[in-house]
Length: 324
Image 1 (spheres, helix red, strand yellow):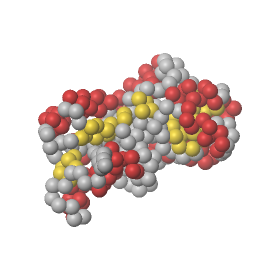
Image 2 (cartoon, one colour):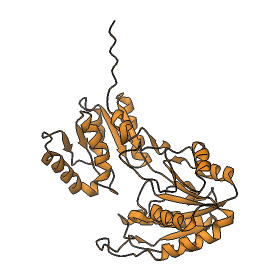
Image 3 (tube, one colour):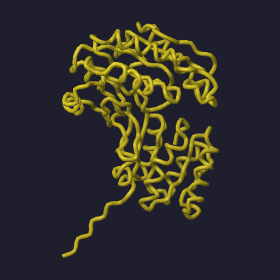
């Protein structure tokens, strides 16, 4: 499980899995091992027998051996595409079930009839919460031509008002990134996109692990920030003419985790929703994981579902009993 939401990411797999009668074994990200220890304590204090949920403070090199152990029946991973490929390969060799929740490059699609002020507020939160370090964050802002300038002006104003500072301060909205190499990667993605023709509308400066909130405009689908996942406070802005172009831009991505559509015409929203390849379509709302809703992606964003009845059933064996 990943470091960016060290408690929620684990509980959303562990709670349904244990409710279904399974035992949970956790290999958490190396920089949140104390969180992993605390999660084990929580299950034990809640009354689960010792060993029902076991944290393994091990390195990534030990994971393959663990997956191959005959006591392990299935594996789930939330993380990067390379990590997902490695884990799924081993599980596949052992003929063991796997569920992968990998990266995302969610689109925020704003049509001309949307409530602009409400849409701006939601899009700012969708991109910049947790300093942009979220797989389901809105990373590509797609604006219909007729309202693009007005929306961008309102959006930019809100982004400028986001308070940067100490993450321990409750008023801070933008903190530092988890590691300096992550900030450096983001810097390289922005630089590559600017070289390809994108314009820095706001921000674009890195200072150690801090990367200031950044808006890139004139972004086309061939550019780095459009094609790759940006795991930090950077958003790309692309305009579209009509519904057909909007759908094409959303689906052009190799990722397929989720998409947010902003429009006051709910009949239109319901009509357009099936055209998106993503695992989730949220209307006038940011994509989020909710225990009541199935959560998971398509394409290189992974496969399988977490949460809801679908998440519980990912890790049960469905048995047929026939009696004549």
